Length: 49
Ligand SMILES: [Zn+2]
Image (tube, rainbow, N blue to C red):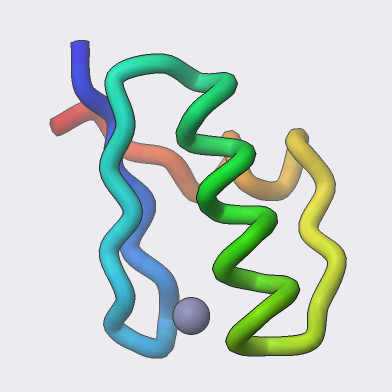
C-alpha cells in the first residue's frame, strides 16, 4: 500500500514502503527546512493513500 506525507510547505512525498517514505521525508526536511526529522516523526505524518 502506498503511503503519503503531505508536508506543511505543500510538498508531497509518496512511497510504497515505510523505509523509502521515511528516507525521502528526512531528505526533504533536511534540504528544504534544515530540519532533522526522526523516523517516528515522519511516520506520524504518514497517511495511507
Ligand atoms: Zn516541506
